[in-house]
Amino acid sequence: MNKLFTKFKGFNQKDWENNIKSEFKNKNYHKLFKEIEGIKISPFYHKNNLSSDIEFPKEFENYQLIDTSNSISGNKKALEALNNGISGLCFSNPKDLNVLLDNIKTEYIRIDFINYSKSFITELEKYSKKHKLIGAIHGLEKIRIKNIKNTICANGNTVKEQIDNAFNEGLLAKKNIQFHFTINNNFFLEIAKLRAFRILWKNKTGQDPYIFTSTGIKNKNKEDKYNNIFKTTTECMSAILGGANTIMTRPYNISYENSNDFSDRIARNQHKILLNESYLDKVKDPSNGSYYIEFLTEELLKSYDIKNNNSNTKNTDTYNTAEQIKIKSHYYKEDLKKVKHLGSIAVEKPAY
Image 1 (cartoon, helix red, strand yellow):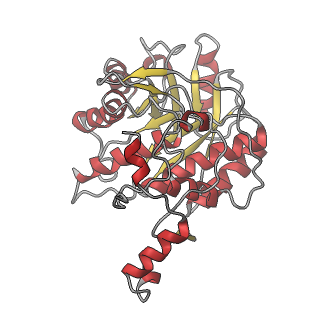
Image 2 (tube, rainbow, N blue to C red; image 1 turned 30 degrees about the vertical axis):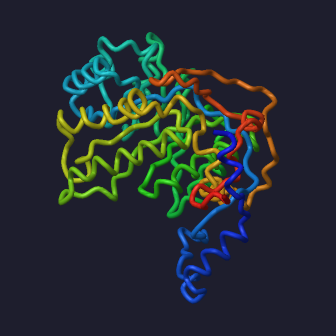
């Protein structure tokens, strides 16, 4: 097997460019380039020099969004979600916490609150005096509850604007905060967005950011309602591969009607399938080394002076695949020293 790879030639970036130009006779080569959110996209990418080591979360919380305008039915939905594999809850329009949180072990379950009233903060502080809470409120409030974070929502029309907004607001907040990013439909750019923000925040503050993500709403429609499931699945994948701490998959029909038992079940199971059947949590930062994603990450950080913060600590777990292949949770450059086919091009004929 090792001798096979000696018959393949390695190519540099210029070789690839010349080959593509010859295929397109030069005249149509420029049409292969495009621009996305101000980033010039090439038709191909080669090796480049990035990136810093990124500290990914050890586990990903699976959140379910629940409308709690009615505290009794909200509590019922929450208990059902927890009994079906959900590890976190996001309550919208919360009130009457004694009813809403009845029989929920709040000392173990992360709970976020959105679309709350001003009086709710007072109720939450009162409730926390008798019950331990873990989670966040989605806003910046003067709140004094030990394990409850404030939330900065990343706003902006482009990915770069979202990163800039979250970073600048985070520096101003000086509180126990988390960052909420909405994941949209550009699969690779959304992965790069989270990776870039992780690198930026760690580089500038020395802290790993806690990133809460939710799937988008604007790109879902009633006419293709079941296609919305594919969209939320790829958005969920972007969040996992980008390094989110928390992923809240919104029901596929939430943009045009209230969710129902079926759409709620699909939403919570999407995350479970990606982890338990696709094993997306087994390798940390799996997009590291993807030339295109590395390029996007670098482009999003171009305006910041990022210092190389490669860690000397090598934290690596292993697991065995069904084929009994031992896989590491993280790979470093030294792991590749014995790999013979690096730099080879699979589509090039062996030089017999």
